[in-house]
Structure formats: structure tokens, C-alpha cells
Length: 287
Ligand SMILES: Cc1ncc(C[n+]2csc(CCOP(=O)(O)OP(=O)(O)O)c2C)c(N)n1
Ligand code: SF4
Image (cartoon, rainbow, N blue to C red; front, side, top):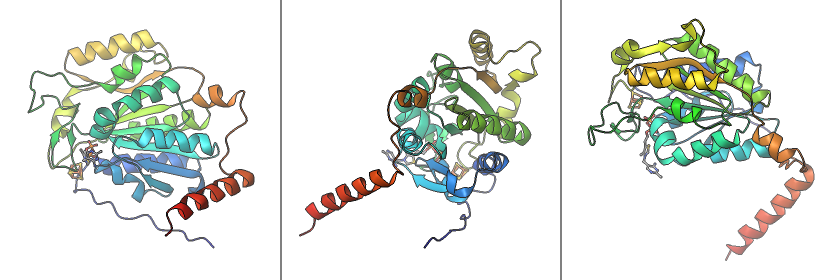
């Protein structure tokens, strides 16, 4: 017997950017025609961490900062799943920063969406690594995750959108999902998604964004050009948005599964083995 649950209503404050991110992820899944039972959306902890409750897909609530290892495991275990991982900037760029670096290095086939609002929304507005002028350390420069991604040579898809430009955001999300589904590796899409309650950056960010794809001569496949352009913009206190980089590198699945027998957790034999093992583990705790 199976039961299908309706998606729940978001718990976010009215005006929160995360509504736009949820819409863009759902749009990309719909555009690609992914049936609900073949889509898996995982999220970390934070206001951003509830997004999977509101999307028509399997959902998983990972530990704070740990959504990427869970998502990579799922995509390796069941290559038929379309895997989307989502996190906040606190989740993804502070406690989860190490996982981001290594995921970009390994290039797994999944879409990773970070909802950047410059603060820890759920815990009431503390500085995150992307806060422009951190209250606790005003001399620190904010992290720019696109520059970080560009510095890792096996990154293959780096894009940034903003919730106020929904057409562009939808296009980036569709392209990112396609990249992952076609086995080209990890699509990393950061979305500027303001927290209207603790750090309302709508006016400021609308003045600072610069769409690199509108620049004549900008080539997203040229890592050097992407890096020089993004760095120059960041140094001018601007925020580069658009498809920043799109390149090629073997994916983690190419590397791991090329010579090994695929680890398919769905095979009957494997499932029976895993069930027997879990029964033994549980039996050990039974008094
Ligand atoms: C291991 C661990 N450390 C800290 C926390 C507390 N915590 C919950 S949400 C959160 C930050 C959320 O901020 P962000 O990831 O930016 O998402 P947002 O709420 O802004 O969407 C923190 C620090 C936690 N739940 N688990
Ligand atoms: S606290 Fe901020 S991030 Fe959280 S739901 Fe409200 S506006 Fe969104």
C-alpha cells in the first residue's frame, strides 16, 4: 500500500525570499517532467531547511551543514533519482563549508541550491559568512561562493540568481537541473533570497546586482574570464549574477561507477541483505 501526502504550506514570514526559491525548484522539476516518486529534495536546518516540505517530491531533513553528503549518498545509491540539495548560507557556507568544497571537487550529479540571505534566519538574525558588514567583526570581508566555486577546477556549473528576477532564476534552475540529470556533475545555484524580518536586503541588493550574461563578450565557459569578471565586480562592491561558469569535468558517478559494479541500493538482493543487517542491529538493542 502506498500513501501520497500533499505538500504542506510554507512556514516562512510574508515576503521571505525563500518562497521564490521553492517556486523555482518546483518549476525546474516540472519543466524536466520529473515524476514525484523520482525526485528527492533534501535540505539542511534553517528557515531554508523546510523547503523540501513544500515541494512535490520525496523529502529529507538533514543535519545542519550536512545536506551535501546525504544528497551525494542518495544519488550514488539510486542513480535513477533526480537529487536536489538545498541549504541556507549559514548552513552551506559556515558549518557546511567543508562539504561544499569537496562536493565541488568531486562533481556529483545533483543540483545544489543555497538560499543566501546574509543571516541565520531561523535563529533570529546572527551574522552568516555572507553578511556584508558583520556586526561582530566589521573588518571581515564577506564570502563570495561563486569565487570559491571558480577556484575549484572540477566545478562545472556555477550560477547566481535573485528572487526578484524570477524569469532568470527559473532559467538558471532549469539549466542546473538539466546539467545534473544529464550526468554532467554538480550544478551549484546560489539564490539571493532576502530575509525580510532580520536583514531586509531587497533595496540594497537590487542596486548592487550585475548580470554578467548581459555583458557582450562574456563567455561562461571561460573560467579565467569568469573569475576576473566576478572578482572585479566584487571589488567594486557589486554582486555578479547569471550563469557565471559552465564547463566540463567527469562527474563523481563517472569516476566511481566507471569500473565498479554500481552500488544500487534498490536491487532486491541488496535490499534483503540490508534488511537482515538492520534486523540484527535492532535485535542487539532489544531487551
Ligand atoms: C549542528 C547544529 N548547529 C547549530 C544549529 C542551530 N541552527 C539552526 S538553524 C541555524 C542557522 C540557519 O541559518 P541559515 O542556514 O542561513 O538558514 P536560514 O534560516 O537563514 O534560511 C543554526 C545555527 C543546529 N540546528 N545544528
Ligand atoms: S526569519 Fe527571515 S529567512 Fe526566516 S522565514 Fe522569516 S524572512 Fe524568511
